[in-house]
Image (cartoon, rainbow, N blue to C red; front, side, top):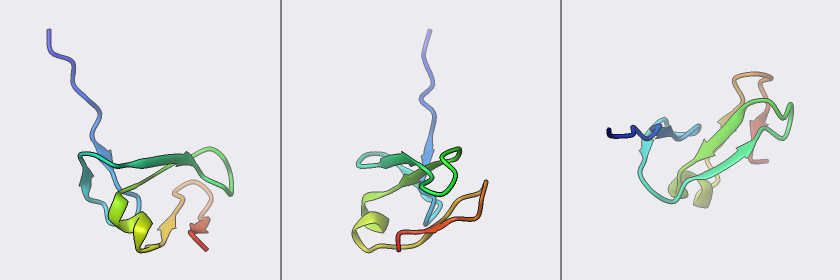
Amino acid sequence: MKLMKKMLICSSCNKNIQTGATRFKCPGCGKNEIIRCGHCKKTAVKYKCNSCGFVGPN
């Protein structure tokens, strides 16, 4: 039986992430998980929480 891995999608650029993902709970509400690819993290591309509307990284 093959197990399917959940595909990770970057919260900033919406691309599939193969490796190097950063995952954390929203700093605003703590409910939604934010997932970021290495490129978006390195270049500080903004993300938005779908639950509370918090916008980061600044």
